[in-house]
Length: 470
Ligand code: FAD
Image (cartoon, rainbow, N blue to C red):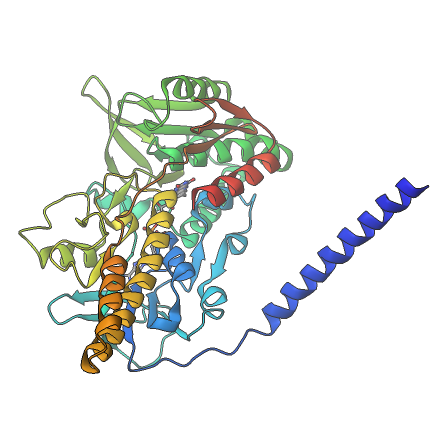
């Protein structure tokens, strides 16, 4: 009886504790603490973007030391790894977007969050110009503000290889709106295909989705789509479900080049089973309203009819990034993006501009994992820089007052605080969902293994992976 009483007490205790913790979080969410107002005597950090790098930086910076202004056309952080699931409705878009204010409202000092697009950085004048380009905006045109430090983390633009038709007729998979556009377009094609009287040829065209890009984004989207066809369309649209086709086009000899050979072969085999057509060594040449033109390995062009076209072939640079690079022509010469040193300082504007994430040309892969680590590192660096400033002010005071012993101690402390370690990337591996409740993982501790599990396992595992990698 004693044992069971203890067990019962344990269960009650845990339940009460969980409820108390939950109540505490609900209370905290409804009653955010008072914040310090912005202080003109403090340095101003302007942060461009609210993605992986910027959000991680904001999480780790102590805003007691700075005035922080965030400018981003999205007033939320988007958990991009789950974006492919939004295209087929497995996940609701809003559930993977966290309002930026939800984070900044809990910082010690008020953070200004402006839903606007930065249109110009003037590195010489240390100013940023921005504009509210959302559907609803006030009478304000462009606004220019000064900064002491700039955190440049605007991410990348989707790659189009300069093919005009891609921007005109294709879909991308980068923003929340992109995923919703794909979903609408997909369902529109399905509904149109169901209208009786369409020619067989037209039905096949409408039901054909072509994805360009064999990296994790393209692979995961193709896999999610195939699952959707099997799990949902087959039930709701039995008359056309077995005619839906998915083709993945990749210019390289194989998909998922960042994974081991074993995992690539496993995925290719899985795709064959799932009837996803793989066209490797095929190059995108052109896109019109109804056909994709690709160059085959034999050099001949092939026209493929499509209903939905999704471009997931990597990163290009945003115009504002190209403009910033143009301000430092002698040092900003990398085609991939902004050149930074090992302290994430922009070459040419080392003491003032820090650039992070997908807009940079670093040796690390353009991933959420590396962007988040860079953001965390920079937040901590700002905290250390504030400590250096504080110690220097104390040193100046001690020097003025002739406090010789204090001066020596403070000099040593300044010297130590100024030794800031460069950024170090720690790779936690790579994951990709390949459909049919299967995921592949190149994790350091798994030695190139394949993990097979249900979707719930996969989502939970992915959560853990991102917690570990941050
Ligand atoms: P982003 O996160 O893209 O943030 C850029 C921010 O800048 C956004 O808030 C944007 O609104 C804002 N912005 C844009 N233009 C301007 C402007 N002019 N002025 C101000 N702000 C601007 N990586 C992984 O590690 N694992 C994965 O599983 C994974 N899956 C992915 C799935 C998909 C579908 C996609 C698209 C990407 C995935 N990635 C993954 C890659 C990862 O999302 C990126 O590497 C990461 O988002 C880069 O972070 P960032 O902060 O540089 O840019």
